Image (cartoon, rainbow, N blue to C red; front, side):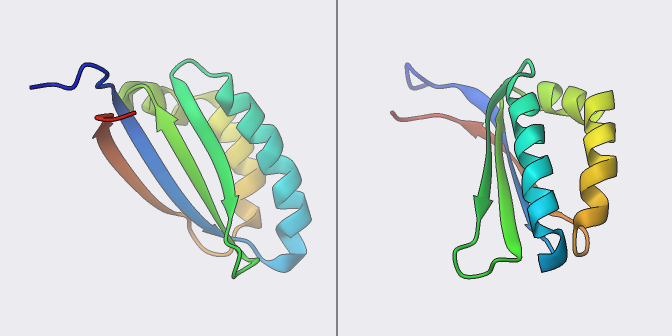
Length: 106
């Protein structure tokens, strides 16, 4: 039986490494990006997290109303433009994982 507050969504976890010389620029840009992404249709949550034991390591935690809304964002001009600025700041490629989820509790 489905939980009465069940909500299907898409959760994304992206791990990033940032060289120290890019850290300030990255933080400035990712905060602007996060504010814009949070305004997009389908974006439920977009958090930027820093590893407290490694100042090179960051994680993006995203929740989207569906995989479709996430894919629409990834295909958008906004994603292309912010990616063109952010991706060169990274150390290596982002490590992303995608999850289809259902909320089953408060």
